[in-house]
Image 1 (spheres, rainbow, N blue to C red):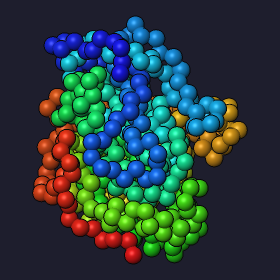
Image 2 (image 1 turned 135 degrees about the vertical axis):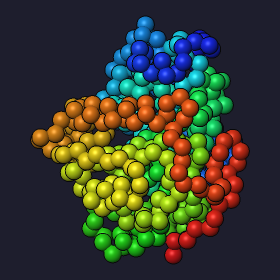
Image 3 (image 1 turned 30 degrees about the vertical axis):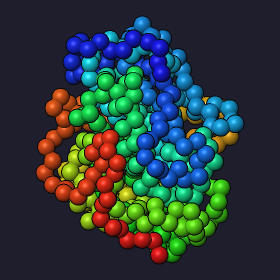
Length: 392
């Protein structure tokens, strides 16, 4: 926990606080879900998270770098004041949760999260077990997409109960940002439902499709190995993949480079009733906008979409260090006409404007579609939901 004074109750309102008069603080936080979970081969049995938060302007921000396990720093992760005191100036703050991409990490939002914190938001980044750069990848981590949504819901529960941050979360104003597979996660939290069998059928028939590639994982080499490993270890979890993972506390969703277009249909978004903005790169070959973000926007009445010319799939990652460029050029090299930091600045502006609009005092816009299905609504255990189609 932070050994520092908390925000003073009764100080300025959260909307006044969002004027941008803060520095960004950052703190590593481990959260322990109270219920039984599928940890997807991860040994720790804990959600490793990063919290960014408003800190007093007297706190000195320093450059942050991200180093995957056993490697030198590969990415610049913005600037923040490590373990600085929470700022004086607001009693309750809106919360934005972050979900990273396949094999990524919360710290790869270092270009975005500090800007939200300086604006007066609490920001909670979750490292998804079995599918992040802090530990070996597993087949379960790659394929059990619904468990990623439960990670975020459990992390919200944990933050609300946390002695340092919990009292300062405005639970009526929670939004979510996802990147790549994390976009599937946050859309699921908003009520979208995938047909995972549909996606696997597509990939088994289009083995060379870039969207079907999987990283090297500890217990699978091919798509068939991936599915067989998960069937053997997590058959019950697999049965629940196509169910609703909606969390009613999520009031707005910003999805970057959303993938898995083949896993969705128009019906997949029937119960999404919160504001959604989609951002994609026109040069994205892993999640081409035409078959992903643009398709979703057509199925989401009222959704906003921006397609950034020249940007690729990995342009939405942190800027690479020289070591990163040498070690992992595939994640670091953008088209010659694209400046990654310029894309970050533009996208950050869109994210801030989106949440300033949707998470204003009183919460997001009133929903126009009523979803009567059970949802994750707080500190209670998850109720049963309608049965989904199991993978064959």
